Image (cartoon, rainbow, N blue to C red; front, side, top):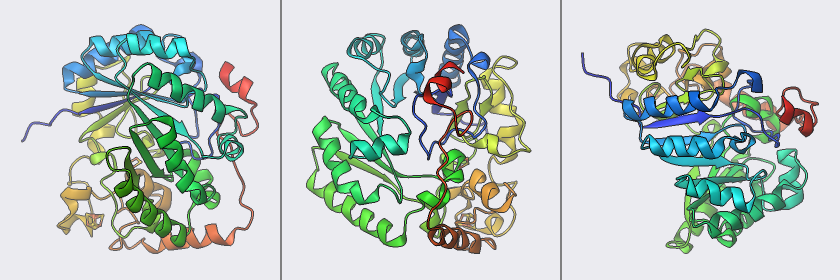
Length: 372
Ligand code: SF4
Ligand code: FES
């Protein structure tokens, strides 16, 4: 038996609380409440265990990680453990002093989310009035603190027309990198799929635009581009393969192979309060379930691409077929591939799709979300 290589990345979901309520949020629909969150010492123990296991990068995420008053201590704990520390934030709770304190604590990089280039539409997509202006101020403080900045823009049918302006916005903020990521249909994005799925024409135009602007902005801005699965004929190696490169620690200490893995009801997750991270990585049933290729059925089992895409996305296979062990229906070789076309058709047929804001309930006001 070959030894299992260590994971390289840890996504630390410090909290699910967030002042924004983005309609494409990848958090689970059942959000963890504040009362169940790991405390400062528990997170710091996670970081030490992760570093010993071989993890190189930690992504401090949420929800909104800055909801936590101990964020600076968590950054310091991750840095002391020897991890490269990246903060993924909406920016709306940051101020100049806090950004400098995070830099002083050892933060290496910030990814700041934007919902659109137009303030009104951005605030509408994020369900939080005034957020866009706060983000623009946060971008200035991040650059002033000399922290490398990536802008994250999730794109979909409602904002793709503004992609040229979103790219200009990234240049104007002084970001070094822009991640243009088409929404991935997990969590809240799955609930809002009919409103978000782009048309083929929008996708083709966006892809052409990104290619042209990449050339034009060489040396000024790097543009990463994540294409939408539903228009593909081969799936991506989601998470780099299940249980191969990444692990996710949820706010309550559950350890998952993927941020959306809780959507698969048959999986049972070990918790960092009960077992060491190394033991969970090596033998947790949730990691073992779809690791490698033994679990695959046809057509993946005999496919030459099985060790390249690892059968695609388990969460997507479950969302579309009800069986997480099936071939990702995005693959044209899957017997369920027709389901993808049907979902696209349904989305375009729906003239006024419902818009569910993320939250502990669809109708929660922002102030209530922050207290939970
Ligand atoms: Fe990938 Fe399976 Fe499709 Fe082959 S059949 S390309 S392994 S998803
Ligand atoms: Fe979970 Fe792809 S989102 S495996």
